[in-house]
Length: 387
Image (cartoon, rainbow, N blue to C red; front, side):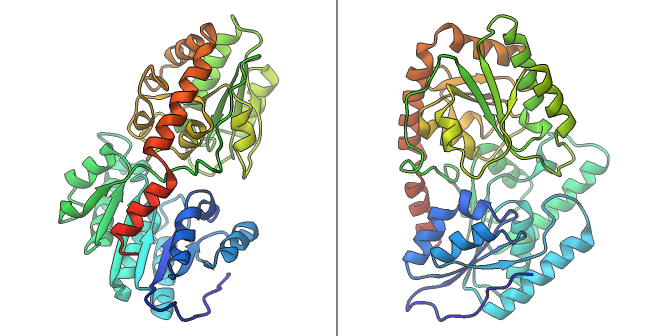
């Protein structure tokens, strides 16, 4: 297990900051600019995540962030495995003595927060990018209802004493309040997602001859991928030259799409599967519009923000998180989840008026610059954390 936790002395006035993720690659994909700002401010930053991803670790080392690999099952409900995660984090915190801890996503928040409390870390924060799949159904039944109650108790324990709890959308904020996950609601603050780097995701003119729709996501049923395929199948009957592309990794989640399903769709000629990538920019530049018909609430989907920065019209579900990125009829269209016929209708609206690809894309870029600039988001986070 990788441990690069040698203990250099922090710069004078700096803090030792522990950032905890459930996916190593996300430290670069979602948090790179934030981590850069921390090290540039003189803080000694240590990142914790489960996979020993050499490329990601190399990027982190280049910006002065040390990496420690930890055991963490991103999915699953094995209490022994989760207790091991808790113990390993507690042991590392006792060793390196961070002043500040910032976990994001469900398991890092719960087990990182608990470990930080037990280790006496003085400044504890949490970044709720989404509460987790156990909060997706309004009224869970059977075993899931029990799992939710356990999760609420764990969140309360992990967030007790946190100085700030950052949330991405109103639905997560409402659940935090309703379930009393923090005692003092004044400590909760809304932030506009993880932001997007507008210098890295440059605006370009969307091609539309032929039109290309693109969906980027982990291959999960919850992302509305089957609806996207149904809509594509519907539209192909009237628009033979349209291309429908799917980009993203297969996933161990119980709601995952199988490789056999994807192979079948490709063989049928409904979609093009582009595999997975560490750099989505060429694919965004080659598409006319971006589609994400997610069934359930997201935090604020980073893929949508990247498509907006690139200057693409957005078609997404009218669900929490997704709807926060679209002013309906201006930079895109909102559709009800689980209704592929309405998704097809929204996509066809752009096909029938191809000038909307450009007009809506320009508004998307404007909204990204106005609302979701990563540097503005990071300044807010660092200010609230005293970093």
